[in-house]
Image (cartoon, rainbow over all chains, first blue to last red):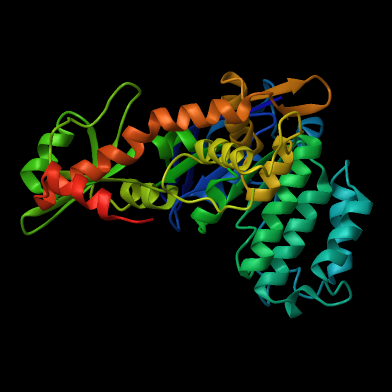
Length: 290
Length: 121
């Protein structure tokens, strides 16, 4: 199966939250969606799963539009980040009722998995959602995502509010479920480095546009952080894709992305360091590129 | 397989190096089964495709081999192969950076050789 979106535009109050997004998600991969606050991540996920209409553009599953298409929607799960406030209809709903609602909505629901995860996270099923901490609400969204057994499952900030042990537990759970089922997962997160190793492909969204879609390891392998005397750095990086160059006195630092077959010019006295995904993200999205 | 991953190089290279080190140290013996890609993925919290890339690198070098339907095994002679490979790489991985640092500190070849001779460990 393939989930494709093409030229998606979403306008809110005259401003483009998404500005021409095209993507193809293939079966059997774990994707990461990273972007700054307001980049359009949640909007994109809600449009991909037909929970929100696009202003323009199309979303198709194996060529069939997903909008109001029950057959296609049965293959998708978007487990939203739960933001409970007083006006929200969910505030007074009990955890177990929310899970029951989800079990009715998602046709492949795995009751045994739901029960196992509720026990694992020690979720208070009789409590109202408004009584839950941020971390516990995240756990509820994780239970829904996993138990939905949907071939394409989208998780929006699943680790928000979780402590470091629970976050590790989540990634273990994800890898276990992925190893057994081969389902496709797409995860958005701000805690980039913890997720980096798990993500086969990474999608970087910036100001409503797709900045990069890349094999995570290839992207990391292609990046170099070069520092030294400014003239030496310029000479070593001449003709290469440079981002986020910064000068401090005589010294200069630059994030460089090498294309296959490219390398830094040899023979210059510079320090070359690897970059992790988080540093790459900052270099690409902090808006000081050359 | 208890080392931790770092940022210093690609994850798949670190996975293949860790398996090699385990073979050198006798943690993994020849003709013994190595962890599956899914096991490696969960052990290091990495994508199974990345773990698979690291394992396949060793298959390509004849250090591991695949038994169909069972899994990956350490090949006979793997330990010898790894030793030979690491000895060959020793100049690039250890000697070259040593010389570069010596050069920028103004240490001459003769001084360096003297230092190596004096060093007891």
